[in-house]
Image: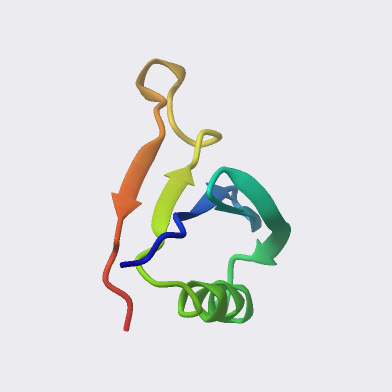
Length: 79
């Protein structure tokens, strides 16, 4: 049984995404990635180090004000 709950919070914008990693409610790391293969591979490397991460995406800038909301993809399949 995995006792550690790891959450990746990803705030997406047009040129970069900010990533915050929390374990059992405590921030352990935060960084920005470029929205290209280099940045995505960096994030994928971190995701592969964790068993069953919870992933929370937020992207607000290009969504109309009246339909803004955060959405969650929990235990997304990763190749």
